[in-house]
Length: 247
Image (cartoon, rainbow, N blue to C red; front, side, top):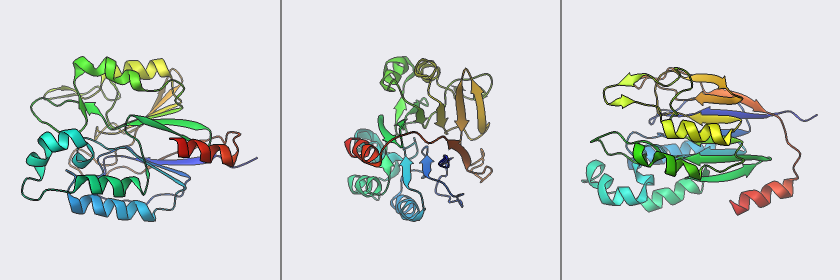
């Protein structure tokens, strides 16, 4: 019997780098930079090039401003990089050449369907990348594809239990509409970050929820990469390559 697939996931590294345990699938759930500065992104790309994983999956986060093309050109460029404009499209291209980048899209890997999104709830009066207003959330999250085995989002769901329900000055971190859609799709795993506390995994109704943010509220390294195993599924190498090329 073949060994299971080893999945290693992290989030919210904010231009810090950690040693990773060996694995087959690497997942980063966004906020790999502080505000999408050129040097930050280049360092991340150099790092991801050299990590020894067969599959490297990345989604953006609200701090990865250069990835949100439309909002970057309208708002974020002037807010964050007014004095040193980025060639953001070139940076996007270079990143995508060195990983599997998901933006409200999916990929099939070794028989597992993985869907990813960089979005998180809007923070009032504080524009960042990839934000969804609560009034639009239910319609927005309908795009999470049925049959997804693993869902990756930067933002956290509201709940389950008290996992990510704590208050902050402008409301709750968790996304209620996202939580509702996850319960409808019923993936094996919902993996996310954004919230720099309450890290770890809990299970509810057969869904494993993983907050893999590795920094604390003061942006200090506080957590280890989260590792879990997936049983191998019967799938031919050609079928897997075909699915990767289609996605």
